[in-house]
Length: 283
Image 1 (cartoon, rainbow, N blue to C red):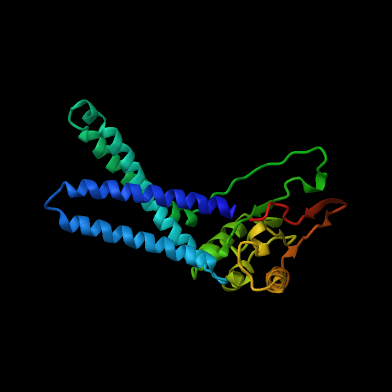
Image 2 (cartoon, rainbow, N blue to C red):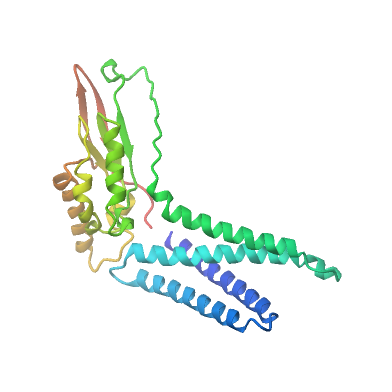
C-alpha cells in the first residue's frame, strides 16, 4: 500500500513538473509579464518544498499524520487543477496543427474547470468533514427475537481523531448527534486514531459523553494497531496498542471486543454481540 502511494506521488510529481514547464513556457510568450513568471516559479518551488517536507516527515520515527496529510493534499489540489488546465490547453491547440488559430474558448473553459475543481477539493477538505449524514436502516429478520423489535443501534467508525488537530468541536457535535438518536446500543467499528494512542487524549472528555441504554461496544481498526507509524522497538508498538485498549475500556468505558462475544439480554430474549480483530492486509 505504501509503495502504491509513493509510486502515485512520483508519477504526480513528474506530471506536475511537466505542467509547470508548459505553463511557464506560455508565460514566456507574454513579454510584459515577468513578475507573473517569477511568481509562478516561486509558487511552484514552494509546493515542491512542501511535498519534500511531507516525505521527510514520513521517514521520521515520530511523524505527524496531520502535517503530512495536509502537505500532500495542498500539492495534489494544485496539481489536479494545473493538470486539468493543461489538458484543455492541449485540446485548444489542435487547430494550430492545421495552421488555424487556437480555440481560446476551450482554453478559457479549461481555466474555469480547473478553478472549480480546486474550490471543490478544498470545500470537501474543510466543509464536508464538519457535516454528518445519518443513514437509517431497518433490519428485518425472522431470527431476531421479538423483544428486540424497535431496538436502536447506532454504528459509527473511522474517527481518525488525529486528523482533527486541536479542534474539539467536530467530535462534540458528533456526540450530540448520536445522543439525539437515543440509541439502545452504540457500536464503534474501528480506526479511532491515525497512528498513535496519544492522538485520543484531547478527545476523551467529548467521547466519554456518549450515552446508550446498553452501553458502547467497540472493535479495533487497522490504523489502531500502529502499523502505519515507525516505532523504535516492537515493544513500543505493543505499548501503544495496550494504551489504546486501556483508554477505550477505562477512560471511555467502552466494551472492546477482541475476538470475543457476549449475549445482550432484553427480557427473556438475547442476541450475540461479536467483535473480531482486524484481518486486513498490512500497509
